[in-house]
Length: 136
Image 1: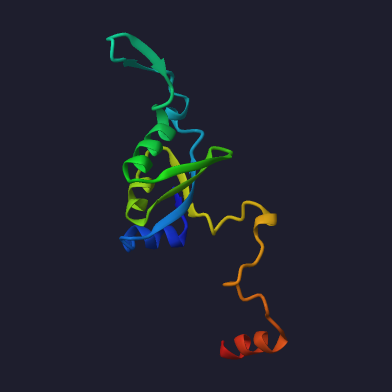
Image 2: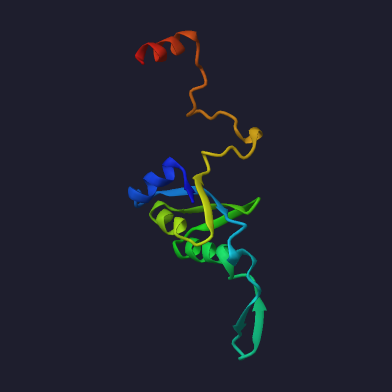
């Protein structure tokens, strides 16, 4: 499993009151990804079949929702945007079938969404670049 550097740091030193947006990729070759339907018993004692709770996505959903987080959206290619408290990052990484976990800042999802904000310093000029190079 691949974990980005920020995710590895969050696993060992989470901030108790902070949340994080993660991009979680499930392994399509994991045997449980192709698990068949699971039988459940409803309140009337009848049996129903469902795939909703089976496999890594079901386990991921259980872990995320149990921590008070949510699965934001399916990003395609077995990848999901997940929002969880930082204290739950280790649990997300422990889900069987997870192939990769990164913060959403590591992966640019859409160039159109990458517009600068007031917090971004986009006013880099030649003198600023020289200052950075001289410091090295």
